Length: 321
Length: 110
Image 1: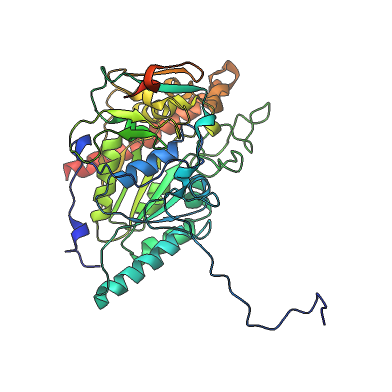
Image 2: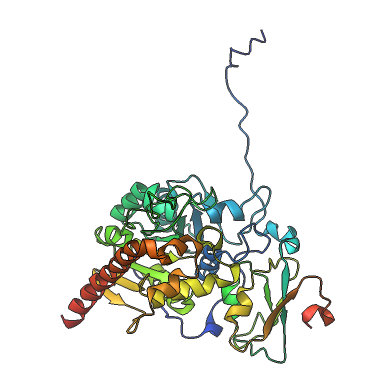
């Protein structure tokens, strides 16, 4: 679409009082008490003044909001299958573009594809790659709860190293998941995407500003939202926001954005909290705090440190240019 | 004639499918999910909207939905699942969680 459309205007969120107060998600959906992904979805929807078109992949949010015979969505919404939210969103965007060219489009709306980590990192990766390559004007949101939660906490390629899931059990042979988390941001940035960013539900202002910035771009954009799951990560429902906050404060989940290849850390963490502050809240990491797994904990710490220094180096190199 | 192995030749009646009114889940009540209920102290509430931004439901009703300033809140006890996030994120600590059975004057809101 042309860059001069109304959607191209970007306004960062300055205050909580300016965000849209008209609800876009109705209560009564069947998400668990204290659901992190649902907080992410609400924050994304409330940040925009125009009602977006949302395409859901199969996942927790889709299953719980569209339980027959109800729908919790107060925005145009569709679900097709697990792997193709990016493809369906591409089609919706192309159709809206065609209507606009013909002069039949009544109102321009942003198109948002919404998938979990399973629908993004594993099952929907090829559809996402195709949509990014074709350059559709759409925002792809991955709400990352780091496993397949509604089917019973199976590991995905987004599950962090050392975490317990039902398919990466903890015992004498295995100290949780043995592989490291896939670098989805690296994959997206490698497509030459105009805008890609990570966000956390605990930092609502940062998240909402990134959504607005992504929607204003004339091309495909990607948002990786950290959304804790109290059932799968084994913590109290009231701690959902606290866990997300600690993930940022311990550098476990760095918040940054990549605009036309330029890295920028949006929430700098000068003095990180010890990683144990993040791990100790969650049952899925409880084995790492035992003495017999100190080697695994050490390895996890070095993975976290390496990830941070890689992003920090990319950001600081470009700050000097 | 009625051999189940022989499929009838088209045209098949195609179902029109269907959709449900957006937001129809509101009729589904989830108040029996919770063990503790949040109670707002409106004297302490400063209207910062943090509970509303972090509520996964949303089960926080804004008393001033049309405005652009601070707004005090009311809990939607039909849909609150009692997760307690609002109590955790409330900056002035105006929300407390009480056992579901406990009787609270005006059910904790105005």
